[in-house]
Length: 363
Length: 222
Image 1 (cartoon, rainbow over the protein chains, first blue to last red):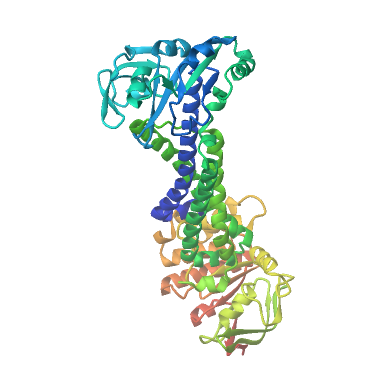
Image 2 (spheres, each protein chain N blue to C red):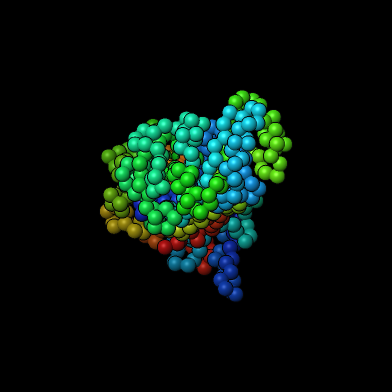
């Protein structure tokens, strides 16, 4: 098709490609970071909900985003079981250690039988942990080259043998026996918190109140509140994501502005010809804006493809989970389009105001 | 014959650094509809300045220009652009075609800028046929000779039926043979469509193709 917009884009393929990539970068940044935050958040919530306990009983301040303290006596387990409405109570030590992509990972020490009964997780390979150097992992962790019989290092360089793989994901991906964890952390008779399953979930508020009244001075919390989404648990993450979105928009604006400025400088005489032909300011601005929007649209498509590919390969190599949302995709697309339109506007306005005689004489 | 263009006492002064340069010093000109007029004169006498003023690309320092009943000098920039779009066609010495568009694409662009509804493929093909460019429609300017490019430029200038065609040294970059061909096309347009043409030229032979020749010197018509 004989279109000035398409032919101008094709005339400078390298510059057009760089402009498209600039917009794509902004789009991909938004998609990848929001996808990662959503993925982490949903993964956390999914694993938390698979615990199938409605209440967490703990000491105040014992659990933070990346640290826990095993300062709760396991004697509370039997006391809680005696409270009306409680179906079962399971002690858990949650421990964070240096590892992996994020620099920190977590492992749980549990009573395997009571935990599996409460949460409904099942072994798909192997058996539950018995010895102090045995560990059970979920299928996602197992896919990262950790089959049954392999070793995982925890607590520095101590090796633990993978004796079983479980599903579905529930809580931490790695689980030791409670005794093994107590031994490793030197906290006999202690746990981080107690998971409480209610006989009738509709009565969870009443049961929580009863636990609080029976065992005052502790923190009784609903698991839905305890395992919030990532955005709420990491301070400043929401602000970080907003700043990121703004940066992505700025990148798109600057790239398109630079590309259009260069284009217009090169095509000064063509703009003079357009003016001699009677093209109005509005027409000239619209032609340049259409070219910028064409580049932006291509950039958006490339950005989506890049983020999908990057998400796939990052997940393959790190098991980080991406969840791309339609709302963020629309936001990224809007950033690409608006950034492109805004970026082109100043060069377009300058072009529209060029003196036609001077422009025609431009070499 | 109706008067299609009237310029009264045109003056144009440029500011070059700290110096004022008077390019036109009171030019009065009347052009009849259907006239083929040549403007001759030495370099720097104000021919191109006068052409740019008549086409609304510049505004005069003093004077008045009426094009097909519309006052160009009293108009805003947007209005002058509108008058130029509807009433003026330009042909330049350096052809000034869009290199990324085919011959037909250049004409279609002119039609799109002109607006006013759909493009007119029949008119476009008629013009291209008359200028002997039918088999060159899908060629880009780099694939055309100088003469062919200038004929495409001429086709682009007349495709929207302008009141006046302003040609600035249209044969200046052509050899003798192509110059003769392009001049013949100008004459054909003038004869067949009663197209009014004002042409700047240094070439006396080109000027002989016209019905009237005016001479300029030092910003005046002599």
